[in-house]
Length: 94
Image (tube, rainbow, N blue to C red; front, side, top):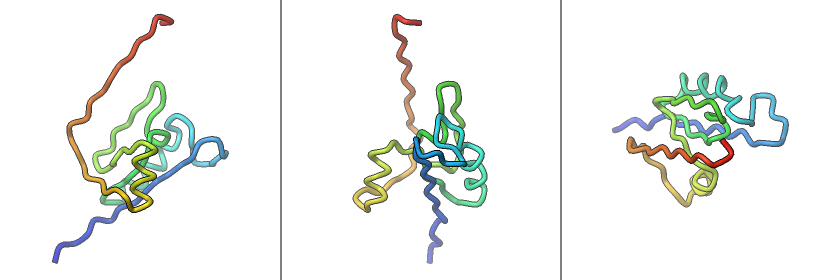
């Protein structure tokens, strides 16, 4: 019998005045604490990143809003990938 992973979903919405964050990565301390007690943490961009900040957690699945909605509704499954791509867009205003 295989043991299931203890999975936690952390959602911190923006614009509601959440005391643990909800703007540009300021919920990162909470995410790090939860990641320490979970086998897998599923979260979204507002929790882990901001304009000057990105903190990768080895046991976190970083899911954008629509994907997180579909997962929570039971329409999609998630699986870890290690083929992340990063894009950089610079505009003339810099």
